[in-house]
Length: 198
Image (cartoon, rainbow, N blue to C red; front, side):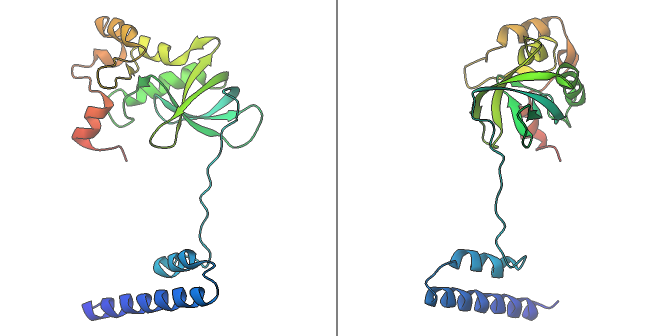
C-alpha cells in the first residue's frame, strides 16, 4: 500500500472518530470513549471488559495447586470453588524460567505442592497484579524450603536481605541447587542483562 493510501486511511478513521464523538455528544455523551475506542481500533462493536478474578476475602484459605509457572509463581484454586488465582510466593526470588536453574526451581516447587491441599496466607499485591502470599504445605513454609534447598534466593530489597537470608547463606555455603552454578545470577540482574523470558 502506498504512502498516500495510508494517509487517506488515517484521515478516514479520524473523520469517523470525529463524527462518532459529535454524534455521541448530541445524544447526551453516553459513551464517547467507548465509541472512540471501537473506531480507532476497529476490532469490535462493543468495548471489551477487563475481568480479574478476585481472591477469597479471607486472609487465610486453603486450595489446590493447578499450575506451576516457575519457582515462585503458581495458580491455586480455592477449595471453596471459583476460578484459580495467580499467586507469587512472598520473600523469595526464584530464577527466571529461561535462565540457568529455572526449570529445576519450577520442578522443586511442583514437588512440594502439586496435588496437595495447601494453606494460603494473603499478604500483598505486586506490580504485576499477582497476590504475594506465604504458602504452607503439610505445615511447612514452602518459601523457606525452596531457599534452604537452593532453588531460590531470599528476596532482597535495598539493604534488606529478606526473610530467608540465613537459609540462603547456608545453601550457598553447601553449594546446593542453583548455588552449585559457577555464576548464579539473581533474576533482577538476569533481566537487566538479557531482558524478560518470552
